[in-house]
Length: 427
Image (cartoon, rainbow, N blue to C red):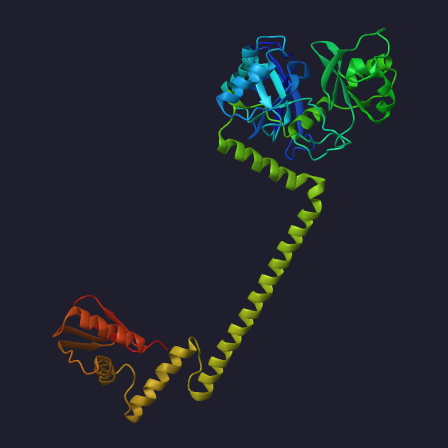
């Protein structure tokens, strides 16, 4: 997985000087490599996630209409027209994961042309976008951790508030996420400690005591500034680690006119599920169980194969012993059944008895198989390859019925439409 985010969200995506911050991870959990470079110099990966900065997205809570397709897009424009500052037709909308019609859902709004520009620039460079994710999104209430949109956060599944101090366009910002939404506040020296109502819209100042449960994180470059301004401790988090967090969320802003095909979405879900199973700590017992099952199956198959090999070898040894005991003159045993058949045939010839491959025996087999119906050939040939009969005074169906009767009795027979070839049974 390769996760990228623009260093300057307002820069032209097609400009050669435009830089993107990126992180690459094989399991989606730990960074393998990271850096900052132009679009054409980005490493290639099978799944590229475009992460949008917090100030590039506005969040709105609405009741999702019971419509779909183009009508849903038009309905969203009507519901959001009075809530956004810019022209609603110039915005791209995206619904929260698994949002259900008739229920309140979060809608992410961002500049459509700017987003399309980043997507086109990455595709032009040969790095198509597989998913679009926010760097920060509204949190899920701790009382409903299994609700739609629930995603992982660093130390807690659903903290009451998540604060992240970072740099955006050469300015330090504090972005705060809660079940009430996402807000961005500039951090400036001498501004004093910010009240809770300034950090989260809709929150009251008497909730200050609840801030002891919050998670306070910061880019190492602005940790000192954030601690001076807000008079509290921040845990430093490297930018690449925060980018990885964007790759772990279930949010995907590639919807409506930017949506991917159903096959691409299915492929993304399969890749994410495989990464989770392969690397997530929660799946470690399942991985160990599967490994133990595979080892047990492998040991069991080897044991069964070993037992079958021993049984087959015992049968070969018994046939070899029977041959050498019945015919002491045989000193080299290569194929015991074939050699025993040959020795029996020699004894039959020496004693005047007919062998199974003699002409008289083969003709007798044909007579018994024909039964009461007279089926007579006009040409007979006999050699080491068996008995060949042709010029039948009967229809083809009768001859084929004779062939099937011979095969049912254990004889080897073949009929090519003109000639019937008969050979003794296999030993």
